[in-house]
Image (cartoon, rainbow, N blue to C red; front, side):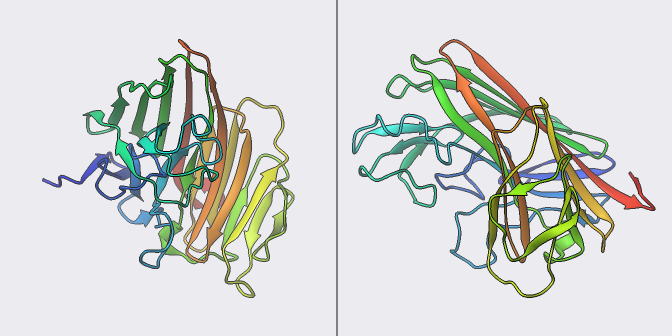
Length: 299
């Protein structure tokens, strides 16, 4: 029995999930539901590590979330040597009065998660821990059905202060380990407007981005706007060389959309704004479709 991983399996998908505190032990990403690989039909894979160089990066891999990359709960209020809560991670010690930096390695005491599971579903639940008036009950459920994977989140404010932050899933994607290039297209339901023009990226169609095969080697990053006031959002990444793709559909309007990547990985990221008064809760979800496309038909 593997004591570091669990698997959700059905006839189409095999989802590999690292148990909290095994594959990832850092202070940035949510320890719960840390998905290190998704395999479609026994052969098509989607997950990549953040970096291929040992010791470089922050340890991300596959589908892993983060709360408060720029808006850490309670950080500004915490005194030097005091603690603040990083949702999904633990109580972090504030070392000095510099601005919070998600690249930095902080000392922390991890939250403990209760885990319930079946063959096609697993739920992580973290009980409230008070920290300077902040306290939350956090639940994260991952389930699969056919070629779909759904991640559902529930955050209940059990403290005395309002919880205001953001959350996103850092999708570290490489379809069948194919290098980033012109075989990839990233489609949105609108024309994406980039706040900068990365050398690697160009337009294929009005609402589709693609990548150059040559002339770039650096990591790319941009903030994408152009989405309207719809209460949902989606993006689709497809690789024409393998005929395989992934589509994420969110049940929320993102507060921002980011796109990061390198030669080995592409990461579209939809952020949700978290704003919860004491006694209230917020729920949201992301649904991923992993598919094969032949003659324009996806299955």
